[in-house]
Image 1: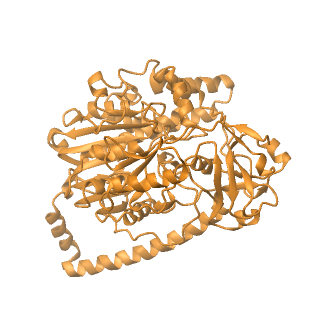
Image 2: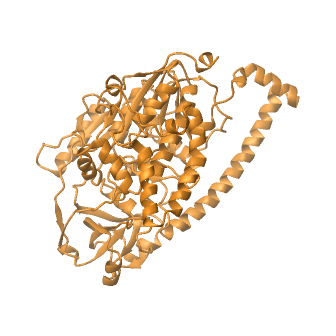
Image 3: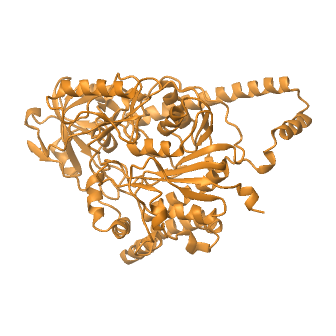
Length: 608
C-alpha cells in the first residue's frame, strides 16, 4: 500500500445501459457519472418542527460547527423553500490521504459499508470483511473498500480473512477512503455481533458535523422531503404511502399534517412495516398506521364499498353477535401474533448467522444512528427482484422486538384516500455514492413496468379532487417521464398533471428518446450476446421478461407490445410541472424525480 493514495474509483456500467443514458443526456452524462461516485457535499437535516423550532436546531448545529473549525463559511441555514430542512454545506474532497501513520495496518470493509462511511457513518463490526494482523483498539488503520469485480456479486474476500500481500494481489478492486482509529481488536471485529469497529479520523471527504443527540433531527435527502411536501396533505386528512419503508416520507407526511388525521403506510414485508412504526415512535408521531401489504393488490373490489352491507352479510353467514365476533377476532389476532413472533425469531437467527459469515448486511439502526444514511440503496429479496431506495446502515442486528403492528386489513376501498404518495421501487440509479452500477436493460424495464402496476392502483386509491404524487430515486427516463406519459394517456379522462411544489429541482425531459429508448437498448443487448456466442442466458431472461411483464402491461397500455416499451416523454408545458433532480447539478442532491397529479373525477364513473 502506498503512503498517499487518490480517490479514483473506476465504476463500470452495463454497456447498453450506458449507451441508453448517454443518448438521453448527451455529454452531461459524464458529469452525472462523476457525481454518482461521490457523496453529496451538503447534508440535509430534517427537523421535526412539531417538537423543536427549526431555528433552534440551526443554533445547535452551528455551535458544533464553530467548535470544530474557525471559519464560519460552512454554517448551517434553513432551506429557502423547505422550512423544515436545515442545510449544512460540506467541503470538497481533500484529493488524497497520507496513510504513512498507519504503519501498514488496514481494515477492509464491504462495499455497502463503504458507501455509508463516505456519507459520514462509523464502521460497525458486521461491516468489516478483513484486516491486518495484530490490530488493537486505539490503532490507526487505513480503511479500504472491497469492490465486486464487473459482472460478479462477490468481492473475492471471505469475512474474517487476514490481509496479506497475496490477498492484495488477488483482489485488485480495492478503494482506499481514509484513516480511522480502531475501537476494537482484530479478534473482536469478527467475534462481536455489534458495536463500532472503527471511527474515521481523516476521510477522503471531510466528515459532516455529527448530529447525534439533537432532538427532533434526522438526516434525509432534500428531494425526499420535497416529494412529501408535494402531496400537500392537510391536518385531519387521510393519506396513503404505498411503499413506505423505512418511513422517512410517511413521517414527513404526518409532520406536515401536524399529527392530525391518518397516514396509512404499506410495505411488502413485516420487517419493513415495523421499521416505519419504529421511526414514527422515535419521532413521537401518532397518526401512522403501518401494514404488511402488497400495494398492487390492496384495492378492494367495488362491491365491498358498503361497510354496512358487508357487516350484515358477515353476520348472516357466521351467526355471531358483534361482541362475539370481536372476541373471535382478538383470538385470531393473538394467534397470528404468536405465529409471527415465532417466524420473526427464526428469521432473526438465520439473519444473524448470515451477517456473521459476511453474506448479508445487518438490519437498519434507530434514527440516532442514521445521520449518515440518506436513502442508501438496499436490494430487496428475490421475491420481487427490484431495488428500492431506503435508509440503510451497516449496524449490528438489534435484538429488541419491533413495534406491534395492527392486524392488516384485506385492503382499502377505492377512492378512500384524500392523497396518495407512491415512492416507487426503482433501479436506484440516482443514489450517491454508488461504487458499483450493475443495472441491466432488463432490470430497468422490470422496474418501470412494476411502477405502472403501482400507479394503476394509486389512481384507484385517491378520491376525486385528491392528489397523487409519484417519485423515484433513479435517473432512468423509462421509469420517470415515460411512466408519467403512461398514466396521463391511460387515465386522461380523470387524471391531470399539476405543479409539483415547492419547486426545487429542474424540469423533466421533453420529446422522446432519440435512439429508440429502452426497446432498442434491450435489442442491442440481445444482439451483442448473440455475437459473443453466449446469448442463452440473455435470451432466457428476455423470454421471462416477455412472459412476466409484456402481456399484462401491453393489455394495460392498450396498444400491444410496442406501447409497452414506448419512450415518449413530456411536452414542454408538462416538463415544467415535474421535478428532475440532477446529481451533477448545483443542488448537489441525489438523482430524483417527482410528478404530481390531481384526480378530476371518479375512475368508476368514467368506465361506463
